[in-house]
Length: 250
Image (cartoon, rainbow, N blue to C red; front, top):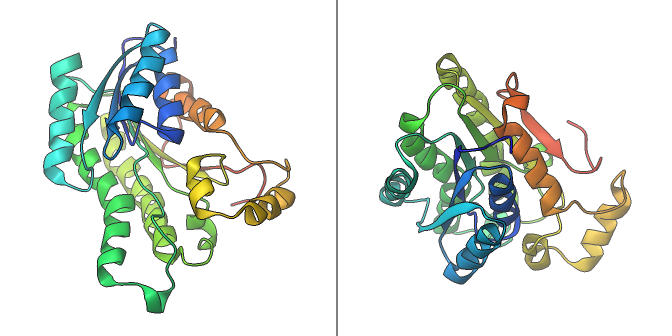
């Protein structure tokens, strides 16, 4: 119960990595706000998983690429759990689709940047005024930010690279207030992301190139998030932690 009575906001918290993180933070004692956008049913399912283990949570709809929705997420959080937010996990993001340079419309470029980078800015801006010393922000980057991503993932990779840089900048800005900021760069994690965007052969090839010869699990990522959210990581800030089973080394 390292996070007992802490309030945690998880964007994209209803499924896959977000679900695992929401559930793990609740197991550690946090009161969790599960943000969702396109699948209310999965949000309710995640909430039921938490409540089945006697955890506290609410679900909160919102498009985190919109400032008004980010502000509304914070409003719902403080109405439910009080005026202080201790943990923010910016999971919301996605590849959406693979497009090469000459195939990419300006609108698609803008959408990917908004989804993967602007959302981090908007939610962080809304949450930080409710944070105090000891609070922590955890952003999600990607291995793609390290290596440029796979075919057709250039803008996704660039946006995730921006998250890495922004994490370092916010760590410097918020450090004097005692607020820590870190990010994760997952490799291939067994979720619906790769079910949609990677072929079985590509996934097998990646596993063969990984030191541990397997994909990671959402639970393993959630364990790392819980550590970063806890006081056990109290001298870690500005880091971008690779969790990829030895697929690549930064």
